[in-house]
Length: 454
Image (cartoon, rainbow, N blue to C red; front, side, top):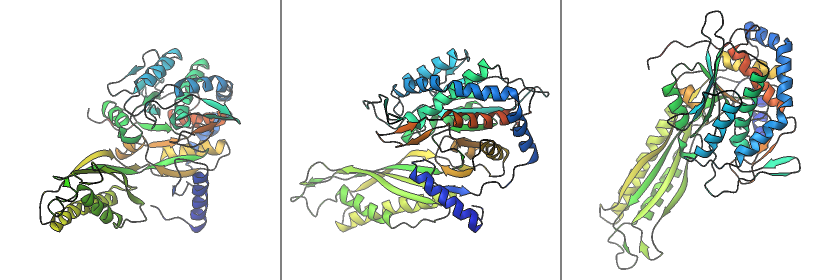
């Protein structure tokens, strides 16, 4: 992590604390904001903001705000639990087609994908920018997802994380087509699967495996104005199963080990693992279960372990310590009873690669300059999102907000206040336009990447 000046560090910490208080999913400042942006980026956004064509486009975003809220309500009330996003995907696909992408489709992994071709510019081939929001929510089947309105807020599970992002993508597509704005680079509109829980970023992994020509990514998530996510926190998750013969709590005592006791030893050892503060590295035993009755020596027990870090090295070191602690606990439980009948199985159930988009990269400076055009100071943050995948591949990627105040993520009381929410949708759209360029106004800031083997 780059060194921070004292004043910049205090500002970042204060901003991070504010994000935490407002319920942002990106509640950590991870790098100093660029003090300056390169002249070409400054000039591009100056030209964009001064152009009547772009001002008309932004007015169209504002005018479309009320209609976009109807899209938001429609999609929110279609349940989309992890691995069961199909119905929402079909609805989002229908809206993409109705708003001007007739060739949009659902791919083999369940992502909704639609390409809005650019003009290509003088060289005939502009960059391809992925703009995305995830379809899935954390909520299980049977959750009441009816949208309710009170006190100026809309309440429903998943309404801000991340159905708002989907609605903003649809609004962008509509206004770009209605206003006949031609970008130089291609825009790949995506509603992806697999971002939440054990979805394991499967949607993004599939997209980047199948589309080797993506040059950058801008993801939409619920985030305060000015927030730019540049760090993808990596994570590994394990399901750990302890198995033994089991037996009567009185008659078999001293003869067989308890799977629960073995798991308890493991948890105690895991709790003593030390991790670095920087880069931030964490672990938790998130769920536990097992046994058959109060008077039975447990034949089985199971726990789930989450390990995260802002860098892969410390994550792997912590992972090794935790896996070793589990093996030591089983050996100690067997030794306690002079047997070898307790066994453990460790299954990797979550693997999210990590990465970072440099603060001085074009895509970050572009977002910073666009934020300034709307009067916002930029805060660079990190979290685990869909952007982890391109970051891990060295592809420029950021996550920004789509407008509106939000809170209650992953809770039944999740809400969004869309008062003036169109301003955030304008801001993020301008970020995108600078990256891909606008025909007759600006050339793309995002560079084409060198071809990779398919």
